[in-house]
Length: 131
Figure 1: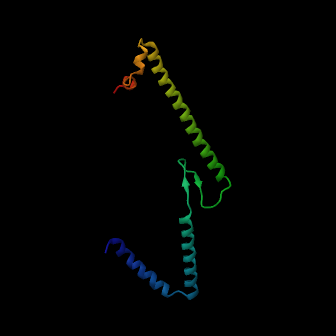
Figure 2: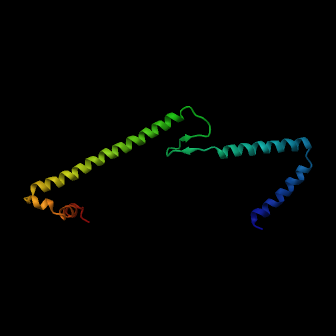
Figure 3: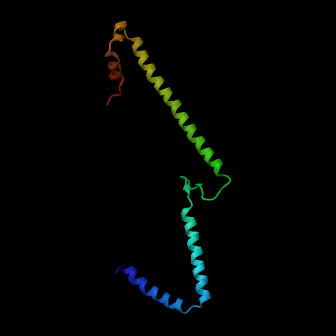
């Protein structure tokens, strides 16, 4: 038996002895109060709540008038972020293509060199970042 059980056992015995001396109406009220408390605990445990980084609740188990607006703003902000990232990636890809095109146009290669099968592999190897 661990120390918690040794500590709890005399308390349980004292509570059991005290309840035997109580009136039946008091025990019935205690039983009803316990059932209400257990039912409330079950309802609170089943409610879902998602909390944001700032500690604000975004989703409650009960209806909130501002909830759809908050979710709409969150979705719009997410879409805006994805759009800006896609747009920025397009600019960086255009910069890379511009550098390759400028290097190709500045070279004095004959047109047959561009038709060579290994030419694209050479360009990819030549423009890869150094490690």
